[in-house]
Length: 507
Ligand code: CA
Image 1 (cartoon, rainbow, N blue to C red):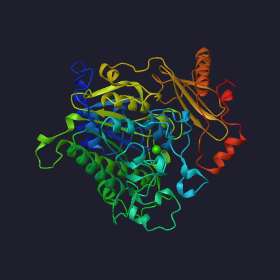
Image 2: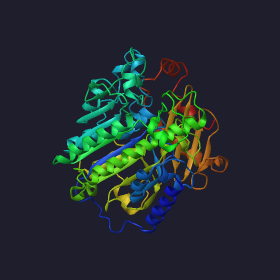
Image 3: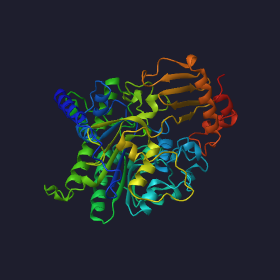
Image 4: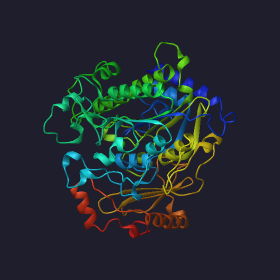
């Protein structure tokens, strides 16, 4: 492993010497294939390229992910719109803050059968990036986790995806054949995988991450045969719980590892949790190698003259921060999934596209997952439907020119708790933060990445300005259109939520 890290250091050092940019064109020559790889609960330091960038020692093994990252542009300040799964995915694909359409809570587990809730999902009025790309002639595929609505109007095949393979709920067992046999199914994780609405019985031994990779490759191979470009949204479940490292990966990474029956990890020792978590990321890295191999040599005959890599944009990011008690590390950031401190909302990210995305480069300015929709639409020459609002920006030219896409515009993060809100408002490098009705704090992210030194006392004027901006912003938001639990709904009604006035006051 030491050898790997040394090799990686050389790659990254070499990459950083070739500064990019000047030879890049302002617009792309052709509409590219787009491969969007979205991980679930990946820790900030849990891919080699990001650990290296922030000087964090790590035991993750991600050589294939790291090679792509260092061959492209790593985003040092990439943010998602919400610190947990469902709302983050809805934001990514709709291009809007989830609170604007009431999608700021996870959809309830379908198996919970809460009244009427199975019929909910991302409102049909929010045209998704997949539809826009499909309308522009792209062949579109969603492989993996959906979590945007399970019933027909909200199903991937109704929302701009020609192909879907995966599961529509919030997660899945990693050995699907084990849960295929469970009846009755008591949670989403036990449902059959499906292909375009048809249940799939998984053969024994099938490992979720590997089967998602295989389906992604099949999709890309079909797409490469077509005249039009393809858009692949590959939403791996990994490394989200349950902590099911693949047995062979655990044995390879930890020769002393004692094989255990895949469980929920609750009874694991800390080191067992971490080992499973690392193994789950390793399986994604193996998938990345297969994806790169397919793009480099689609017919697999060893001759790369049929490569499509030069016309493929690959984007890699996570839906939110890692969960520390599941074995993740968000170092050097504070807190984890669910928080609007950096550890919940700031994620590893890179883009790769030979000769188009600057190679061996680090982009220093903040970018948002919300920026991908307009950026992809721009590259695809796709039309944004009339009346469609997008909360992000097309960052393509800023990326090529090394410019900050939003200057001093404030950016907001908001998560509802039972009785109050957790809010962050960032302007420039300063970030105001409040959890429920605790004191407002201000952190300087340029000097204090771990958010430990409160500067509110010396920035009261700025704080008042940001609170005004926050309140103004909140007036465009609506109540959650669903709650993930009955208790959540009751709390909302009984505690006077959303409590905007109180949230954005200093008291
Ligand atoms: Ca997640």
